[in-house]
Image (cartoon, rainbow, N blue to C red):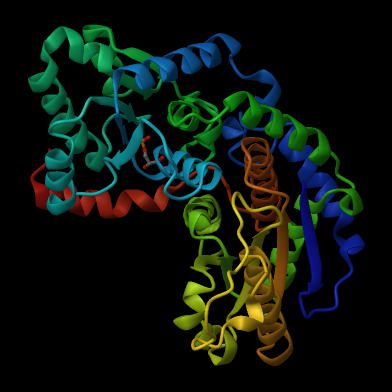
Length: 424
Ligand code: PA5
């Protein structure tokens, strides 16, 4: 499902020398004995998810599609990025649907919030608020504003039918609101942290509402669970990639740049940046994850990658079968000197851009490249990819000897901000 190519990493390596360490970490992951093991609920989730709740997610999604032509998905961080990555990757850009998804609760921007309020004024609206704590400021601020909008537009009784809450099963500020008002609600399990929650109703409800077949997503997760449930490095490409991240780090590469060649994969990189960055970046350790979207960014960041500081390696995510393709057309004249492409598919052109760039960055720029080829961006492949990256991350973060599942550092800015905002 995912083809890993390590032939351009520019280092001599002996993967087998890591086998013992990988075996130990594989056991730590599967026997739940490593640091932060309370948050390893994602490991067996493909086989242990709550089927009753999953069916309710599908029913709620159908109801949303009947009720609304705009769904506001209100959340931030782990309660936002996964759903957006999935919907953009699987549906592709400018997709035709009766339901538009608008992401709120991820910014304090007065301009963004005010414009969205105006944009939805005359539309039929539903809202899915997603927050484990219920107290995340961006999300809580937007929830109050958009909840009021819905209540004013539809009245108390109807608004309750249009608000869907995804939160902790008993703790946090949203659960009491669910109990008091009777909103339909879904649970973020205790054992699955924010950046792994895409495989729970956090990601699944917005995906299903967007018309994505979430049974296929779960099938992809299961297949990845089966394929990657081995400690044998030679059979486990997620672990090979995980080890290679650490190998490259040891050669002085402190930055991992995710590269995609499809604009609708930008949010996969955003999701990955959180998954890797928040999991590894602690105790003065970790690779800095960053991203570009080519060929667009070859015209901006390309110069740096080719000739700038040699601090990074690239992890390129390509797609073998695009959602759409077309042949480059013939014209009446060749004034634009583009005739050499007549009859070639645009996807082929994109592939040549990737191949030419790979050669330039590796051979001349001396920038190591890891290449991951996805078969396609179907719901099934997407599910597979998510679990694949979970395994990569767990392995490589445990190799760093950090707890991959906490994020103590994100509280520091909040303390300062709350002081400035006058919060008790
Ligand atoms: O990974 C994390 O834990 C964070 O990104 C959280 O998901 C994010 O801060 C949102 O938190 P909450 O779901 O409590 O609103």
